[in-house]
Length: 81
Image (cartoon, rainbow, N blue to C red; front, top):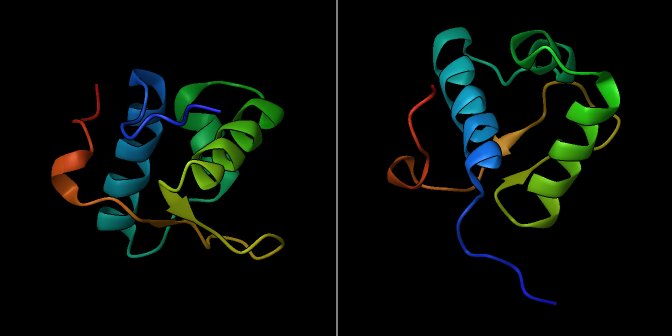
């Protein structure tokens, strides 16, 4: 299976939100924070977080809140639209 080395535009926006949220709040966002920002359903956010984890863009500890960590350098993350 082909796995892209760069995030898709939508994935990039989620990564940018995680980056800026963490920078502003000193902790990573909860999935509920991501849901409120993007105005999407909880399953949509969860599926994106799982995808970002599987693609190696983030790491997380399932079952532990606010455990998302970015694995990309800042220059690999687009600006938040």
